[in-house]
Image (cartoon, rainbow, N blue to C red; front, side):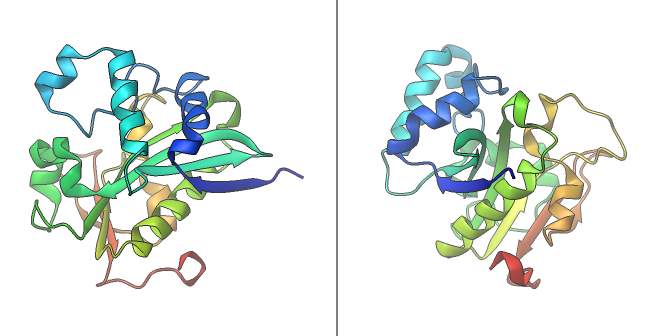
Length: 201
């Protein structure tokens, strides 16, 4: 029987994270830096430089995300952390139009990126990663956890476009819809105003 597990993305797991992003996932060129850097830095950096930025994050005191493993093999990644540290979100029209929270609130966290290696897709890893992301946010005092997924019932999207997540995954995890800034992009949140599913505490 297939066994799945999760771990925080720390410096000791750098090779596993790169295996996910570069071994058949969709993050090779991005290195999950799109939410973290400004437009000018994004335009002037290449994949190697972005990988250095990601590696530097793993050296810090707060893990920038979670990893999923299938039978011990690195299979997926999700970025989760304080929204104010993900600087691109402060300029995002989706966030500006849809979030009910102050943009600089340090206790508002956001799940902003998912990447799963091709051979492990369609196995429910999105839910596994989201469970771990919720636990990480809660353990560090997040008051609200937001995300900005795509409603695939409204609009079909490529696997690349689905890096923000799928709405149905968040709804099953107990998130509630806050706003629809566009027909297919949704702001969802889970926090002190809503009960967390007991299994995910």
